[in-house]
Length: 520
Image (cartoon, rainbow, N blue to C red; front, side, top):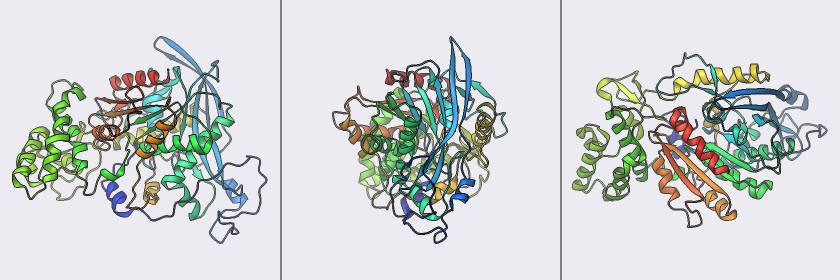
C-alpha cells in the first residue's frame, strides 16, 4: 500500500509542493557516543528552536530489540527462523539522536550468511508503514486481505504464509519515521523538514539499511531492495544512494505497483489519460465476464495499441477538432462501458475519480481506486461533488493495524510505548515533494543504477485494475530506457488484481516465483 486514497492527493503534489528546503540526511554515529549539550542541526542551543535535551530525547526512544525463535509449518516444508523486532537509531552530524526507525527482520536459521540473500522492504504513501508487504505478500505470516471480501470489522487472524519469500531470502521490513512505531527523538521543525522530504527520506532509509547490515554482520550477503507504490520513487533513489554514498552494492530492485514519475500523472498532461485507459477497459471487461479474474493483460492488447496510437493522436488534436473529439469519446465509452453521453460531455478524458463514480452510478456505487474491480456504496450518490472513499482500501486499515500490532507485541514480544501508525496523513501533509518545476521522478536513478552495475536486475509488478498507479504508465516509461536495460535485466509483470494484487492467491503465487527467479 502506498499513495494514499485521498481525492486531494495529486492536487497537493502538483499545485502546492510545500516549499521546505531540502537538507542532508541524518548521519550515523557510534551508538555509544557520549551525550553532549543538546544542539539543533545548525548548532544552536536547545530551546532556541525547540530541540530536545538528551534526557527528553531518551523518553521518546524505542525499547531494546526483541529476538524470538519460530518454527513455521508450510505445505511441503518447515521453516525454522529467528525474528527480530527493533529499531535503528539515527543521529545528526553532531551525534545528537534524531529518530528511531523501527524494523522487523526474519532470518532463516542455519543458512550461510555470505551466500544467503537479504531483502529490505518498505511501502510508500509517503506515510505508510510496511505492514502491507509484510502481512500481504512476503512475510512468514499473512492476513487474508482480499479487497473484495474484507470489512473493517473482519477478524485480524494471521495465517502461515505459504508464499513467504523466507525460503530464498531473509527479510527486513522498514517503517520510515512517522509510520509504524518509528518516531522522532529530537523535537523542532528542522528535523521534520529534513526527514519529510524526498531526499531526506531516501538518505534515512539507505542509512538504516547500511546500519542493519553492519549491526547484523551481513555486509557480505547478496542484497535486494523492494518498494511499493511511492516506493517506486524511493526504491531507485535508495539503491543509487547505497551504491554511491553508503558503499553498499545491490543485486536487484523489486518495485510493486510503483509510481515512477509524478510529472505525467496529473495536471494538464495528456499522458495521464493514456496511462489509465487500459486499466479502465480491464475493469469493464472484468465486470462483464462470468469468471472473476479471467481478464489478463493479453486480453488488453487492442486497448494498449489504441491508447498509444489513435487515442493519443486524437488527444493531441485537442477539443478544437470536433471530429477527433467525438471519435475519441465514443471509442472510450465503448471500451469503458460508460454512457456515451457522459463520455462526450467529458470529451473522453476520464479523470480517475470521474471514472470511479460514473462506472456504476446508476446503482449508486463507486469503484475502488486501489482495485477498481471492487465496488462499494457511494455515501452521497446525489451529491454533485466527490465525497466517497475507497472500498478497496479503507476496509483493510482496521484489521491490518490490529494484526500487525498483535504480531509485534505478542508473537515477537516487542512492546513500544505509543500508537502504531499504519497510515499517517500528517506525514504526507508535511512532505516536501520538491518545487513544482521539478516534481519527483526516479527514472533518472533507474538509468543510473542499471548503467553503473550491469549485473543489477529490475522486476516491476502491477495489477490490471489499479487506478492509483496504472501498469501502462510503467510500461511506457520502461520502454524509454536505453538498450542496456535489456529484457533479461528489466521485466514488467502484470497480474489480475489491484494495487495490492498479492491479496489474490494466484497473483501472490506467481509473483513469488518471479521474485525467486530474480534472486537465483
